[in-house]
Image (cartoon, rainbow, N blue to C red; front, side, top):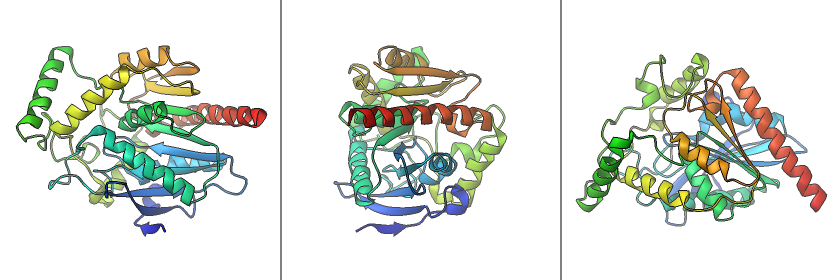
Length: 320
């Protein structure tokens, strides 16, 4: 039985009758999940995997675009962020004990999709850290017919001279019981709440910047600060492990901004060059948040995503 959870529809600006629910992962952590419905005659369901620091309301406008095209959207607050259970005494620290624990959240999400009776086929949209979680999930057989990644965290952008230090510091923090401390250069402040729009790392669009900023200023409980040293070590380990595994034979689009400054572009290029049926699309002048860019960029990306989803649905119908 699903239990209603708080959902800020006025901030999300998603489809009418959207709702959020509390769900529980198999290790007992409470998560929040949002269902953005489509109308009658829906063509399928999109599983939306947000990035680090994000929350379900952030994708209300994306869900509205998908609903208009006939797709339900199911989005999740990962453990340690949004309104899900936070992992440390300092709730602003982005932390996970073991990166693979996020797959427990994915399993809970799939159970919720079944409980809600959401229509098949399912597709994946995964952003940034969600792209790392999503890559492992599709490698391990996530039951989707196609997948889309935006600015995926398949590697973290770190200056090469500093990479050994990042490994050593993050690993050492775990050995000394200090993995709960913030990674160097980060702290309690939310980036969107504290950074100026000028030359920000996320979007070139001031209206979408204001959209994100309004949400976390109105609901400070949604804010998350920097990652912990433990999270950093887990993320470095996970991305290195995934880089050694082959891509699945699943239709895939990957969108990355030409001005991406957060994730590792060479890792993305290498992955997509060897993805059967995959295509990398470099979005001119785009920053990290491709789905939070200008209306023209978003419309172009959305049309290409829908063409992938619709094509996968037609192929499924022909082979059924």
